[in-house]
Image (tube, rainbow, N blue to C red; front, side, top):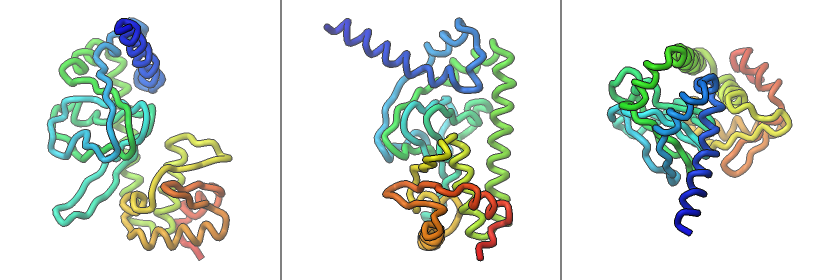
Length: 242
C-alpha cells in the first residue's frame, strides 16, 4: 500500500510538471534536458498569506506556480504597500535574484492556497550553462519584465485614476489570457488599489460607476470585465472619464 501511494504521488507530481513544459522558457528543451530539470524541482504547498520570500533575502531559487496566485509586493516602514505583480498558474518568478545571485528585490506571498515548484540556484545555474538557448529565453523574460514595469510606471505618472484602473484591468485579463465571454479577475478592491496606487474608496467608486454602465460586474473577491473595448479605449485615451 505504501508503494502504491508513493507511485501515485510521483505520478501526480509528474502531471504537475507539465506546467514547466508548457512555459515558453522550457517548452523547447529536449526530453532528456527537461527530465533533468524536473529532477531539480521540489514540490511545496502554501496557505494563503504564507511568505515565500522577503525583500533582502538571498536569491537562491526559481519558483513556478502550479495552482493559486502569488503576490509580488513592496512595503514601506510606514506600512504602505504596493503590488507589483500577481503571478498565476503556469508562470515563474524569482528569476532576477536567481540569475545575479543578489538579494530579492520584493516580497513574495501566497495570495491564495498555492502549489509551487522550487528549483535551487546551485542546480539551476549549471543547468542553464549547459543549455545556451535557455539563457536567451531568460533574457527575453527579463525584457518582458522591464516592459511590464515601464508600463506600470508610465500609468502611475501620466494617467489619472480611470486610466490607471482601466489599464490594470485590461493588463490582468490579457496576462492570464481569459476568455472574452468570461473575463473574471480574482482580485480584491484592496489589492487592485495597491496595484494602481489609489485608495480603496476611490477604486470602489470608479468600479461602481463602470458597473452601472455594464462595463464590469463586481463579485466577492473578483472583478468580471464585461466590456473590454470600452476600458481599452479609456486606457488609450489617458483616462478621461466623463
